[in-house]
Length: 202
Image 1 (tube, rainbow, N blue to C red):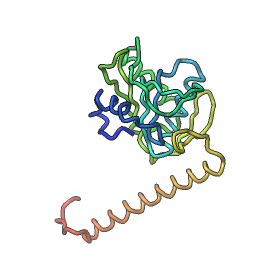
Image 2 (tube, rainbow, N blue to C red; image 1 turned 180 degrees about the vertical axis):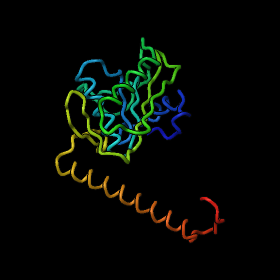
Image 3 (tube, rainbow, N blue to C red; image 1 turned 90 degrees about the vertical axis):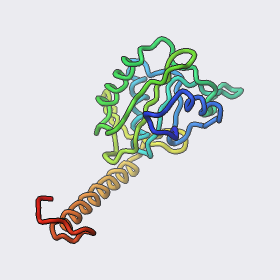
Image 4 (cartoon, rainbow, N blue to C red; image 1 turned 180 degrees about the horizontal axis):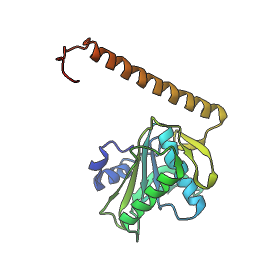
């Protein structure tokens, strides 16, 4: 993930990824082009987004060319940040957001997209996907019904055991949050908090 507040990311931050040879990883992935409108492109895009949400969160950066080795295989390292040629950034942000909102269940809270200008061919689009506490999230586009997560620099489909563990962990978290809230409300009502509160509505 780009080590900066999302709204504060600049062209210099994107260029620093290239200059410092920051490799793709569990929380960062480069894409040279935006996903197309075909079903397979959309499924791949949704798998990428949901895999970040089901892991630790991360950034998808569109408009960055990835280095290739002698066999023309990707190296996970950025080569240059050219930007995206010939796009309407506002329209593309709306399109990608609509794909995410309609193709993943439950919806991922806090997923954000923004455009960064100033590159040779056009803007770079960055999608920040937070780690979700409402998961696991499933790709539902065209009845795909698949769960994905990330290990190292790749996404992988979860097997039955991993899906079961993800639902169990999610349930445990909700129970802990509910118990914490109930305990805190009880202490407030009993005036057992660190500060004594007046006998007025709290």
